[in-house]
Structure formats: C-alpha cells, structure tokens
Length: 60
Image (tube, rainbow, N blue to C red; front, side, top):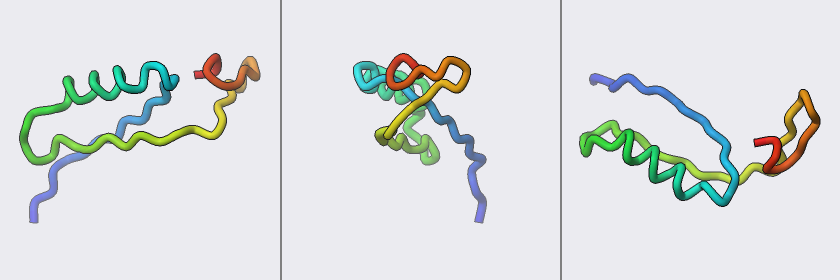
C-alpha cells in the first residue's frame, strides 16, 4: 500500500475571518485529486499571548 506524504498546518483566526481563511486554504490546496486533505474547524476556549498577557482576539 502506498501512502501519500502529508503535512499539517494549524492556524488560529478570529471568528470574523474564519470563512475567508477556510476559502483561502481551499483555493490554495484544492487539486481535485485524492489527498487534497481536510479542514477541521474548532473553537478555542481561550487564547493568551505569553509576552503581553493579552487575551482573546487581540492575542490571536
């Protein structure tokens, strides 16, 4: 059985740009062939920037 090489990309974006980010990933990654991948969308409970201790959208 031959496996296709894979990469994993993780990104965190504010809710108001989520749809645009998903659309951009699809546009860049879609070839129409097996192995194009999947997009998993999930919520983050909390985001904290360590350096400044900012929280929420400003930390993203």
